[in-house]
Amino acid sequence: MAFTNAVASGRASSLSGVAVALEDVSVVFGSGADSYCAVETIDLNVRDGEFVAIVGPTGCGKSTLLNVVAGLLAPARGRALVRGRQVAGVDADAGYLFQQDALMPWKTALDNVSVALEVAGVARAEARERARAWLARVGLARFTARYPHQLSGGQRKRVALAQVLIRNPAILLMDEPFGPLDAQTRGLMGDLLLKLWSDDRKAVLFVTHDLEEAIALSDRVVVMAAGPGSRIVAEHAIDLPRPRETSEIRLEPRFHALQRAIWSDLRAEVMKAYGDQFGE
Amino acid sequence: MSRARLFTLQIGVAFVFIAAWHVCAQYPVFGEVKNFRFFFSAPDDVGLRIWKFFATGMIWRHLWITLTETILAFVIGAVGGVVIGFWFARQPRVAAVFDPYVKMANALPRVVLAPIFMLWFGLGIWSKVALGVTLVFFIVFFNVYQGVKEVSPTVLANARMLGMNERQLLRHVYWPSALSWMFSSLHTSVGFALVGAVVGEYLGSAAGLGYVIHEAEGTFDVTGVFAGMVVLAFFVLAIDYLVTLAENRLLAWRPPAAGQG
Ligand SMILES: Nc1ncnc2c1ncn2[C@@H]1O[C@H](COP(=O)(O)OP(=O)(O)OP(=O)(O)O)[C@@H](O)[C@H]1O
Ligand SMILES: [Mg+2]
Image 1 (cartoon, chains in turn yellow, purple):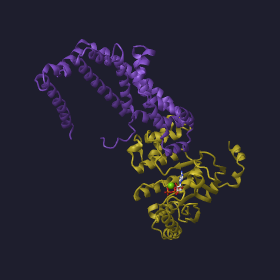
Image 2 (spheres, rainbow over the protein chains, first blue to last red):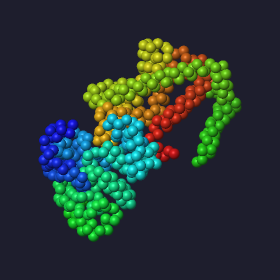
Image 3 (spheres, chains in turn brown, green):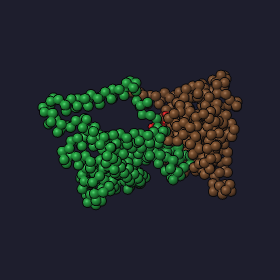
Image 4 (cartoon, each protein chain N blue to C red):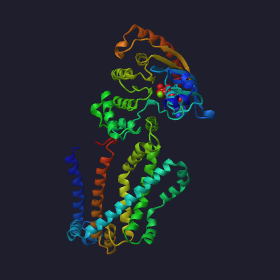
């Protein structure tokens, strides 16, 4: 199996160490006069074990990029590679935590998580056992029998996190996973994510509109321009020590220096988007 | 409003209505009492007749026949609606070809089919079942079709990302969604199954509640008509209650509708 993979994708060797690669990616929605170019000529690499955060004004194409990597959306130009192989169709190597609610409302928390294993052929009893353990890890041991509508927004996000992580995906795509949560819960979820991530260091592509969150969690922050035709305008390496505690790291002087530097890039784009979308 | 108070008021409405009816049947409020009784009967007569229905046991056979027809019409119509609804929703081409015919068939007032069904299926229960099926089928069909079509794109994308193949999507996503839509129309479709049965009996049969009412009408027996109607009304309430119980079990995952406890 391992041999055939290596042979089948000759590129793999040249890209070893790169988990996700976007090469010259452009995405266009619609056609003709109505067509809208969301992102243009995007080049981005995520190394194995690297945690990359993407920030940018609303509507700039962050979710669009994740959809391309996930294989849910075909780019108009360029290509996406996951672990050296070109993405075509839904990408089984990726775990995707969606921006919107994506749990199956007709399944309990436990069934939502265990089904992720059952469809991969794991026996039902074992799948449920492991799902129970994962729900406990995200702090939901007491809520296994609840349906999604009986859970709070933060609890639903944690179920979704367990649902994605239980499959042990090679790469992790997260789209504003803590978006609807209050500041305290965001902090706790961020710490939880870092703890789970530090166990096996998957490559992570993490979209957020919260710059502080991006800096606190990631190894690198990528700033996207305002759309249409959004590009990457800046990349900042986050040289803060790990392991991190999100509430502690915010107090570091280095954190503030980074925040100022990235914000000066981001601000211009946010103002541009603001002018386009809300201006006269 | 507390439960007890609500219940008292509900009983009060029935009481006032029956009392007014009783007064009109006893005293010459609207002309002669005899005339009033011919057209509207009297509450005590109706009550006595209902008691006789059950005391002699003659009504059980009719209730049983109507119930059988209702259940058969519902089951056959629902199975057909689910299968065709699923098929159309997953095969947009098939749906597009058949679309005008489905609309045409659904627009047809089903009562006009009753004589044809009697010709085809005879005067027994099957002509009534057929009438009920034509009513139930379309309700279930449209709901299942909608249920499959209206699966949230995010839930679907997520299921795909979790590695589900087409068969697993059907089982874990499309099917539950379609069923939930079907169950949300359960009251309507069971109601229509009953309407089909009773109307069919009414138009020609030898048994069932519709037959009982029709027989009474044939002899200008207003008391019998009202007694049959009251039994029918309580029969519908009982079935509706059972449907509610089934619904609560099957749709436990759904948030309660706004405004309900
Ligand atoms: N299916 C679609 N058809 C047409 N335009 C689309 C479609 N999906 C997204 N867009 C447009 O593409 C742009 C990028 O959308 P995207 O969802 O990627 O933004 P985003 O950066 O994730 O925004 P947010 O931070 O608000 O989630 C937006 O301007 C949006 O209107
Ligand atoms: Mg988005």
